[in-house]
Length: 116
Image (cartoon, rainbow, N blue to C red; front, side, top):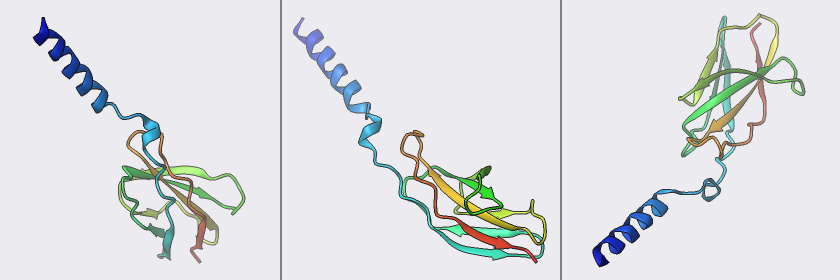
């Protein structure tokens, strides 16, 4: 009987120790878009790597205060946009995504570029 209770207590402790509540994780750091480069037919943005980020969501708008539309998810700290129209200025924001989805960062400040 004593061994059964001891085994049960150990099992409960192991389960409780393996479950970490989502509030124990802090929000991921907000990405900073460090560089925006234009090519002949593309725009490339680079941002700093965020520790503990699983991936990054990239958003784009044609106005700094307009609606930003989801473009894609990347597991790299850069994105190259080929779906552009020459002469149009595009505004980009990035969000770091956590593995649990509850600790995602805030969106970065926008950075813009235009292919001439």
